[in-house]
Image (cartoon, rainbow, N blue to C red):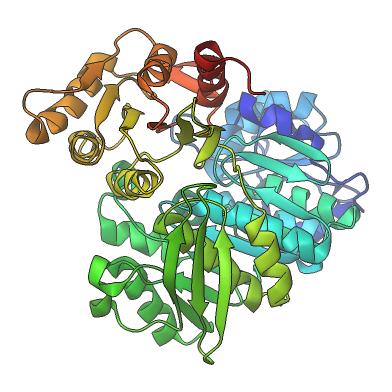
Length: 542
């Protein structure tokens, strides 16, 4: 299907890829040549492909276009665009075959009952199993995937010289970095990124794995060396319906088809359930990690942990958090996380254990972790307290649990008032909106309520739901402001309110380069807007 967001990923292809005969792919993946209207079948002899794509706007000459049924339209409708771009054949389901034949006469069509289920392994075969040439990790969970994956990026780069990053913020191979269209890209894009990495001598990959991606087979065809789990919190229930279904989706990563080892945080009941499930299945070795003291989280009921954190302490000066990680053999590892709070210690501890299990020397891992700071949109420091300026931060926290953990972490580095600028998503889980409002009213001093991504919903109705939660804690709306004009105005207002001892944190969008309003994507990012407001108030930094 056509998706403008993939256009920027077109550069992430190997320069050389030995073509694979279509007949060989047909045999290996049970693909059937489609029957034409005249009763004949498409011939495959002499045809070969040098790549795979599921997006008609992202096809290169000589590739196989996979026309998948989508939520709104069938990819077969876009076959003419793919063929015009150079696709030599089309893979689709039986329902799409007639459309492709009608729109693209003469183009060979292969069918499979569920093409999405085979496109990952097929792409891996076309790109000659690139994942086998790299040290690979994948992180899943509701919150912390991006932070953990960037910690791993720093560690694996120190170990192997360079690392692929593929996640929410960017797609990066070597010196090429482009905006990411989603947390986990479609399988052909991922496989060709790994092929480019192998071709250029990049030695490792740090990937984010969303629950949607696991269910939709985007990681099929790749077995990572170590898979990690951060936590499970309320999110995406518009897609998964229940938390148990949400956990089932995450659990799909921790199987022999997708991973060789598992490292699972057991700070919440869902992580503990997942660890038990994977352990009882007996297919993967499992390391359990606990970052939070059991008394604070109820983790004692979740069973023991192989690795656990103690003595976490946040520095008011640089906002880093030092901690001790205890290992299963009695070892103690003194480490420093470059971000504040236990929420980030959890990410750091997970990254360290994943790296150790991937074979990274301990000293290398600890040193690289300490330097992995200023991750885009994740506790991203725009201004630091210096006696004149307050601390100004952009963060992606957008679920009630994440917001609570984030505000508690920032409170530890705030001698004055804590100011939060926030909103909630449109066309997503509506139940979390008042919950977000209540969390912010309870934990922050000053609230500035604004829009996040209204999408097709009325922005006022979203803000009203958030304010309903605020009123449940703060009925008089004391120190609460609602900005109805534009998100940028709310960010500027938050900075205006910030004194030298205060912290202002803008949450919800993090790294996102667009604001979605009435089905329009408007170029917008919190970080430069906040930086401009900081400089307007306090002047350019010395």
